[in-house]
Image 1 (cartoon, chains in turn yellow, purple):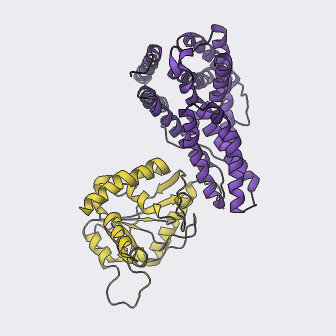
Image 2: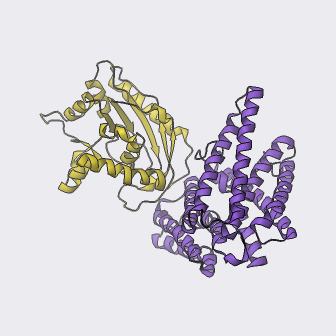
Image 3: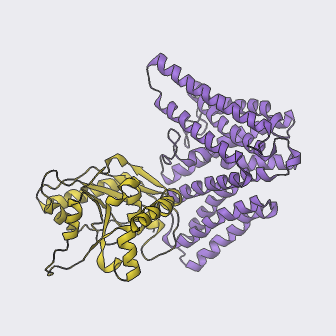
Length: 216
Length: 309
């Protein structure tokens, strides 16, 4: 039942919203993973980011698409939690707990074993509008967990304009055409620092592709 | 198809014949020369899609036609806003500017000419800075108010004139509003293609080298003459114009189309945008298709309105 609701929500509400009201300019859509296990990593400026990234994939992949999202934010009350878990299909992630005994990434690893496609925002939360913040090393931890072959491809995606359409802390949606630049998949090579540098470099290169008007 | 007058159906059939001919021509060229004519092929394929959408938009019902044109305005205004620098504090102002689109096309739908003609030039002109003052940010105020209103004027007010053709009194014109709309849009687009083609074949001397180096005097002249000839040929079936009036209408659309095109090019140059998108393969973005219409719609409308309504 909730699976059907999720399908209808994305078919009837999210797709028209993303494709008609907002409108996307997608570069290199073919680089997106066609199947799991895979991780899509993107910069994060707006609640729309997740909806847009999910809309980039064919609807038949919807059950496989799992955004990883902050537990403290999305599970803060019953209604939001139901919506986040069942309709958006998030994997809740506990932020900032180091001393905890249980493994915060356990569910993420299960999802990858299940051939899911994870959607991850390594900045940790929606950053300063239309600026890319520093990436946290969570992605490296995930990559590290799955060293076996075939290695999980990490596909970087740069999003621009969604923070203008619906910035953090605002609820009025203003239509702007948004850019989605997909990069070549990255693979874990065994070194956390090198991997993080690779991710940052790739995102910087992607963001440099566009020529965006000022927004102050 | 119930509402469409016979001349409009024939005119549409003519356009399909033209497209069929172009598609076959590309096939023959490919066969003869071995080169793939990729851009030309893309362009013609996009024309097919646009013509089919346009046919559906004018064939189903008047309401659908107006909603279709409102949607084109929406796409163009959104594109404009995505190209120009905007201020974060103006998000709400921009929101209200978007709301002006359905409102403007509502005036068209109910045929309220007085409101249609002043709503954006007067009321939105006042509402935009008034709402901006409430936000309180004075840095870049004039520039923001000016660009927002300019965008509404070109992409919404101007283009809505094309829609108002549909609600002009039917008894004045046998082919109905759809005939007038067809005349305007066909001639504007045909003039674009003709200027491009004449320019490619004989173009040497640029008209406005700083703005658009590819626009040549030869292309402009050839295009305008072609538009005048086409207007003279089809006006008797689709419009209330006499032959002399039809020639002048062709001239107006030919020159207006050129000006609309180069004005939008100048804006793009000013803000440093090279291409305006990839919405329509082979053509670029929505702006590249409606730029000429932003001039020809109001010019043609008021010319017609003054002479016959």
